Amino acid sequence: MMLIARDLTRRLRGRALVAGVTLDIRPAEMLGLIGPNGSGKSTLLRMLAGLVRPDGGQVALDGRPLRTMPARQVARHIALVAQSAETSDRITVRDAVALGRTPWLDALRPWSPADEAHVTQALARVDLAHLAGRDWSTLSGGERQRAHIARALAQAPRILLLDEPTNHLDIRHQLAILDLVGGLGLTTVIALHDLNQAMRCDRLAVMQAGRLVALGPPDRILTADLLARVFQVRASTLTDPQDGSRVMRFHPVV
Image 1 (cartoon, rainbow, N blue to C red):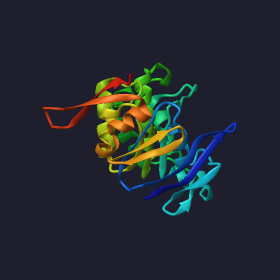
Image 2: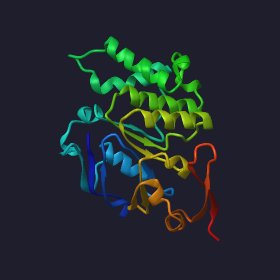
Image 3: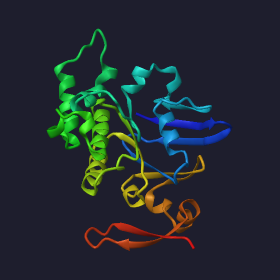
Image 4: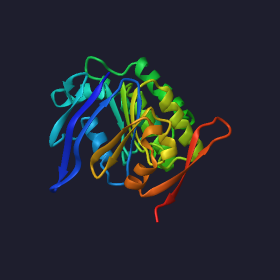
């Protein structure tokens, strides 16, 4: 399933949050979306999910513009894990994850054992099965983050969009979530702050001031020039003796 953005633009009070972004997201790839705070990553993800309508350009799913598709149909194919999805309702973790099945339910297709299985599997995938009966309000920030991801997985999407999903997670669960996402076989766009984590992606899309300024494999994109120009840092590259992978240490540009 192919997700394509053409010349996407979104403005707020005369300022361009996203400006002229064109992007082809390949089937089954993990595309990392990186850039400084305020570079437009979250806005771009919301437009790719069909939740925010662009002021210019369009997003198409397998050649069909998202704006022509019913929201329920879009949600059967695309799931977004946002940074600040919260609820004040008194709800259990399992019930929160079950909300991911909403796009698949209607009067002719009520809740079924198959839906129950999707929820059970999603909870297990993010290591939350033991907390399924807990009240949402009692969860830590990291546990809530994993529950949000579980809800998206219960949605059974073909395309998964994640906005900084490792925020609030301890290092073990950061690595577990990245391993999980990488092994799903879904088309994935994942916004990340940690550039070493971003090196796990197949390609990186670099945002700066609302514009897409670089796109390609991590080893080609994360150059000294780009790191200085976009992130205002310089990097020392090391080799992990355990597996030979590239690891970067960052220093401020002075």
